[in-house]
Image 1 (cartoon, chains in turn orange, green):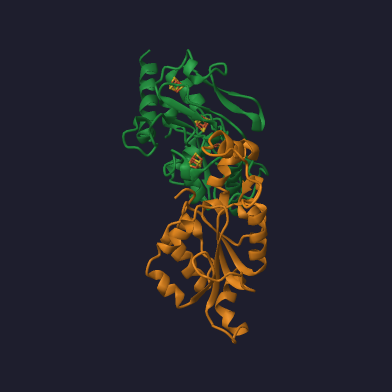
Image 2 (cartoon, rainbow over the protein chains, first blue to last red):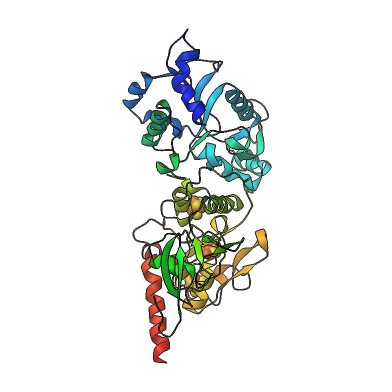
Length: 195
Length: 248
Ligand code: SF4
Ligand code: SF4
Ligand code: SF4
Ligand code: FES
């Protein structure tokens, strides 16, 4: 584990053509964007972090394609559909350290509240029983739901888990600064489920 | 506390010399010596059931792990309370609790004061390795003032014991076996239809999770009578019971 995080600092060595900064990304699966908002809550500390980190791909920046290889990806949200699954598999292949950011990624949290009821009942409730305009269950544009929303680590290997709904900005800052120092942080000290 | 007329046993806990009387459990002696062991089903003043297994300890010479809350002290025993093996098992036990029912802390009325949630953080549970079961279980809101949410129940049976042993109503029981077990009121009647419940609120006060709560109140709500004084409230009741017993 610490080998990977050492790689983050030693990144310069095998990548001397481009920037010497740590390459990071963030992705958003089945979540509410709250974890990304908490990321922004780091305020001016983001500017400090950007001296050392290059945010290559994220809902917060403009790049369209996931880069070849990044050192670190923070993932928000549970895996609830094939679309989520394809996304996270691709991210995993192109990421050295994958961090589940927040309870939806760690436990499936709020998206999982539908799980005991089944997709059929949920779709019916949302698009028929409570529909104001037309009662049609969509089968295009919106991705088809998996029977269960599940945490990210049920599908791909996750290296670190930062709990919280959302994790506090201070906890995200701690996570990033520790990794930049080449240490694998103990995150249960800075956050917990539901915080 | 040393009970007069009982034999004193001397032994070690984590290499420290300790003593207790023969009627004491390992957990009592641990608490007297400020040795911390996590517990969920144990509560001072209620009988021990050894239901949650969080208090497991290692005892030299036994290859089984034993629950400290129901294990009596013995002369010369060597107890270990904090080995890596135990720490690892305790986290696994917590993970099983989380995977068996639907625990969604962010929207739970006990968020912030829940004993299960707090232990998760304290013992360093990073995530749940086991597949979540997402069972479909009910919420019983038929009682005038209280709610039972099976989604958050860990079957510690504190409610069963406090209602029986302290209130004397015996409204609660456990129905079913293994993973199918559920707490029930009366003979599995809705709680609101219970003839035995006196609405005393003791079960609400002792429930370690968000499974039993007062209606319209968040558990961290300062105006909630029951959660707030939880830890003070039960020893008071047991003392009163003992005083009464001595008098009669
Ligand atoms: S009972 Fe405790 S662990 Fe379960 S959801 Fe509520 S706060 Fe979380
Ligand atoms: S309110 Fe009192 S009598 Fe009723 S179930 Fe709870 S402990 Fe028992
Ligand atoms: S309702 Fe609460 S006190 Fe009763 S068994 Fe479940 S978790 Fe324990
Ligand atoms: S506290 Fe001992 S088994 Fe629950």
